[in-house]
Image (tube, rainbow, N blue to C red; front, side, top):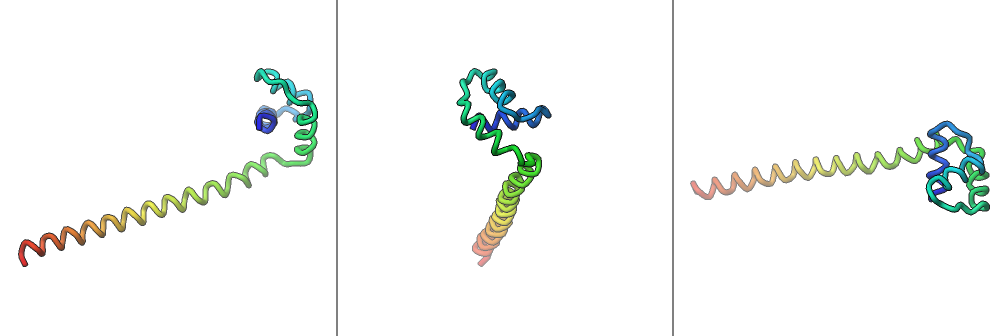
Amino acid sequence: MELIYGALLLHTAKQKIDESNLTRILQAAGMTPDASKVKAVVAALENVNIDDAISKAAMPVAAPAEAKAEKKEEKKEEDVEKKAEQAVEGLAGLFG
């Protein structure tokens, strides 16, 4: 995971994601990176448009949050309606 975080940090800093830079990032964080893993991550990210990947990954996260907010609003409306009905029933008992 730290390799991906390091690559994202390099991307954000507009630095080239290569073995040397990624190794230096990890070493600066006090880690001893595995050279073969660094090489594999750099090779895997070579033809990836990171900005597109981030935007596509963030889209599904927003959808469930919106659905959850809608559910809360529906529940609040139901609760308000239920309480109103209970209040009417209570008043009817007083006069009835």
